[in-house]
Image 1 (tube, rainbow, N blue to C red):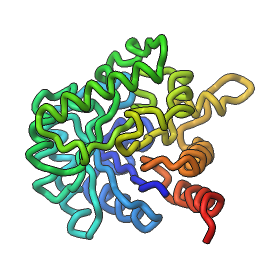
Image 2 (image 1 turned 90 degrees about the horizontal axis):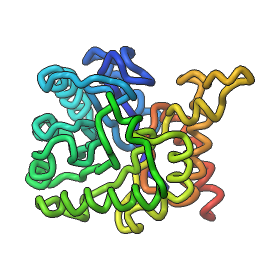
Image 3 (image 1 turned 135 degrees about the horizontal axis):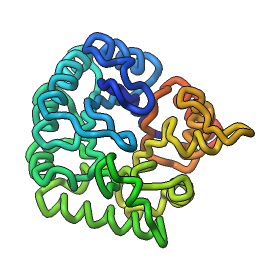
Length: 269
């Protein structure tokens, strides 16, 4: 059954929980709460990647992320650092983080793959076409699954050429990143086909815009972000039943419950 990743955004502007955990103490407390709810990994990020977001300085990102990593690691939590910057990845791992989650898959920072190779930790490589400020303009596909798979394979080749251990690579299809709702659904229907089934797949669909659109009211207004957890849990159960490796979510308890249901249906005691 899937590894469940709980999200902690130490930011004022993330699409789901921006500003709620923007201090070190609040972020650490939230991370510990997610572990209590059943998270296997806590993913800590200090830069919003919501559509339209502008980048923060490396110093700002470091100051947001590193103290939280230290606090959670000291409490015995398995921590992933969510960053596109090689230097942030290095410092976070030096502070005790054990996974690097790079939403750009190495395309943003040309030093990332070499640094990850040197760190020798699991590396989440996400499908990515560009930064948040203009990524929606790049949501153009003729064959979504085939193109995303090809681009992921290109990123894996780039990473392994720089020395990244292929057995440590985890692929994220990048739900919501340079993708419209129809592209997200196409990828989720065929998620098993990505990366040829050769690497673990981590899906991060939690509370995203395409779920809000699916749940829109009669007036066409998308469901509010915090009211998308039931849909997220339903998707989590379906993906768990299909054998997905990992799920990255905001509401850990709902997903853990959904995964438990999927496990009961899929396996006999």
